[in-house]
Length: 109
Image 1 (cartoon, rainbow, N blue to C red):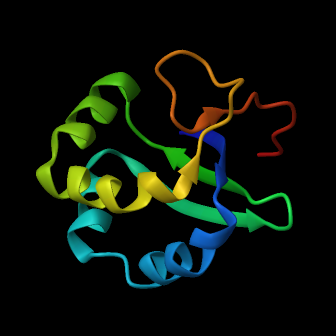
Image 2: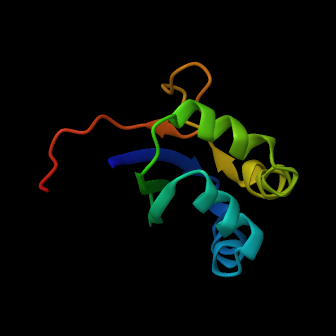
């Protein structure tokens, strides 16, 4: 199992709708995420900076492959079409990233 953290900006005026969408996450999105070997997925919001922090535990052995399969799912594409216009990716993210992956500096088993 690998713990992973990511950060992303969110547009201030989109916060209420983003919260609503995630309170009412489509069941098929939860299923797709689970099939991608992701467990204990949480998203936190820090205001007034308007930063989202995502945490999950990856239980697979091919993260890139699992992410590619997740991204190919039509319902996941639909979900992202709703969420992405509300988000503000960090300018300092790595090429190919939307959510900027964070470096792990402390993990207590």
